[in-house]
Image (tube, rainbow, N blue to C red):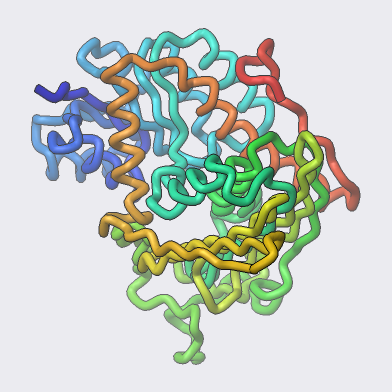
Length: 400
């Protein structure tokens, strides 16, 4: 009989409610026992939804004292990931932290030190590693189809960037710090995974060239005469890419209150001589991720979008007769190309086996995606390349 793992979710925003359903589903091997959120109205809504079957807490320490809770999902706002993750690990709970791992290298090291001492499972919410497309790409790389990966190029195309990030003056640099952290952490993690070694240096350029800078901070969609604006919010609602609808402020995307960079271009050096470029754009007309990976035997191209029109193409240019191979992995129909369900399955499998050996790799994933984004922003601010500190055994993880 499949083990049923009792879970708790910390932070009941849109992603928290989504996790509460997924990691409270017996079909996935979980049952939701508790949630924690500082907001009394949010907890009232949860009580109406679940009744007395789910305990509601405003105090994290009180919730962690419940011996029935085996696993904790951290889905708080980005600035607040570190403290509950550390507390849950110290309480002996299995922990999955939603991406990004955190927003600073100091917090990443604190989490790493705690993970190193933990006797429970630790994971980061990089569900795209479980997507059918990216699993297949990694398998092909591991088979040596293109040889040793030497160069990488990634385009993170975010056509919905205006609606996601540039309507809310409360969620700008002071909150998210950088869209390289908030949005691009998935693609940066995948790039690190495919390159097969940690990043050691980054030079970044970018800025705010499309959104913001135009109107006073008080301008709102509801009062705007530009009815055909492509970023106009109607009824202040936005459909997220994991089938959840959220309320949104309707401050104009051209408001001077907006200050997040709307594009970034990175040049990244990897240990052992690999090089990569990364491009993130929030005003492009397409919503997709594209990867070019060049090895000493060939070149791989991978294409991802939410409808699941996945494509992998390998060109073998070094053979006498040039040939091309293509694959079109089929998503399972669930969100993120099967990634959300795959991540859920993997978390359950590791807990059922009490497999803590994977903690080191999970911490590497979270640390290096965070460190790459943080150091890239430092590079943009200073106008020069920035070295990326490695994650050492002493600080709580794998050698960098």
